[in-house]
Image 1 (cartoon, rainbow, N blue to C red):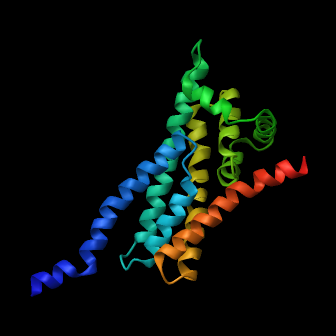
Image 2: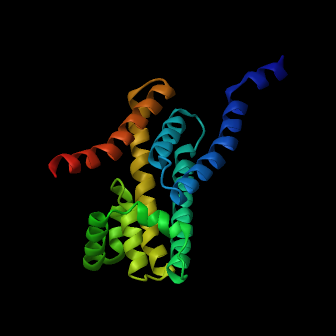
Image 3: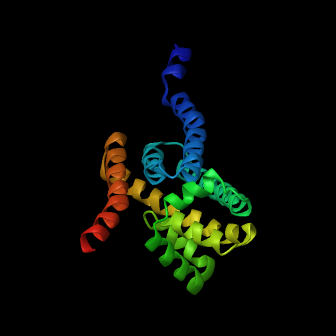
Length: 204
C-alpha cells in the first residue's frame, strides 16, 4: 500500500518531468539561437508556466538559468561561426544564413545603433523581435572581438530570459490549468514577434 502510494504521488512524476524538461529546454533554446526559426521566447514562457504551477522549489530559477545559459552559448557559437565565415575566402553557410536574415534597412539601423551605443545595443536587440541577427551581423562586420561580444551578450541573454519568463508567469497566474497558461503565453509571445513586422509593412 505504501509502495503504491509512493508511485502514485506527484513527486516522482514532477521529478521525471524536470529531468526531461530542463535538458530539452536547454537543447531547444540552444538550437533556436543557432537556427533562428525556433520560437525560443515561446519555449521559455511555456516552461515558466509549467514551473509556476509546480510545487518544486526553485523551478522558476532553474528555467531562468537554463534558458539564459543556452541562449548565451548559442549566440556565442553562432558569432564564432560567423567570424570564421568572415575570415574565410568563400565565407560559410552560417554567415550566409545570418546575412539572409538581416535585411539591408535593418542592418543599416543596427550599424548606426552599434556606433552610437556600442555593445549596449545587444540588450535591446535580444528583446526586439527579429533584432538579434541584424545586430550580430553588424558586430561581425565591425570585426568586434568575440570576448567583447560575449561581455555585451551576457546581460542581453539574462534580460531576454527574464522578460519571457515574466510573460509565462503572467499566463500561469491568470489561469488555473497549466495548458491554458501555456496557450496564453505562446499566443502572447507570437503576437510580440509578429505585430512589429506587420506594423512596419503597413506604415511603409
